[in-house]
Length: 251
Image 1: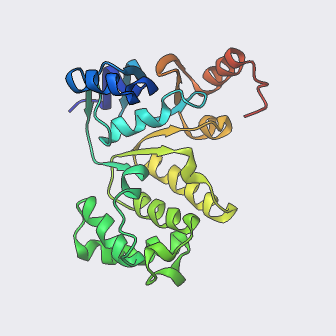
Image 2: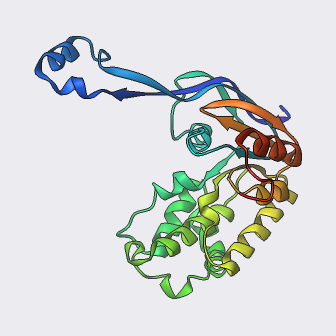
């Protein structure tokens, strides 16, 4: 068995930006024969090499547009890479993936059963865990309400609570899932520590350096889709601040 949960080599994700000239009739004719004639390639990720050991917690930092979320989406299998090779070993939990899997017209409880099946859990197993999930997210009064009737904050509570109680090997998360009131945030990070102790591999993308330094053992920095630095959290954070001219005490 490999010691690595995630391995990526020369990973890249390319999009095409269409120019306004394609809206003119002559350009539309050209576009019919040459579909890419008016499209400019934009690389959200390029030449990224990454290896994450089993049980390791890796932070991903970088300015807006650096490619952090794109990297998580590619690792989660939500986006196909445009180039390079990737190998992920283990069961993945991605909040982004679960958010797209819920059905607004089902109740909260019905969606919990649905998300459980996505993780390969039987109905009986989900039934045993539901009380614990509901208590963790503190959404008991909405248990039988339609998912679409919940506020955005409560919807995220349901998704996060389900993801953190699933049988997983790898957790991919963006900092947006940590938003919320202090009580829920405290429970969330306590659960994160439990997962780390259990040997769960974690990849956390965030701008919050204190969180990165507290919960990650290693950090990689992306800038314009490329990996520009890697190292221990404190060292990587200091290099990031110096590179972007930011005070070390600021976010």
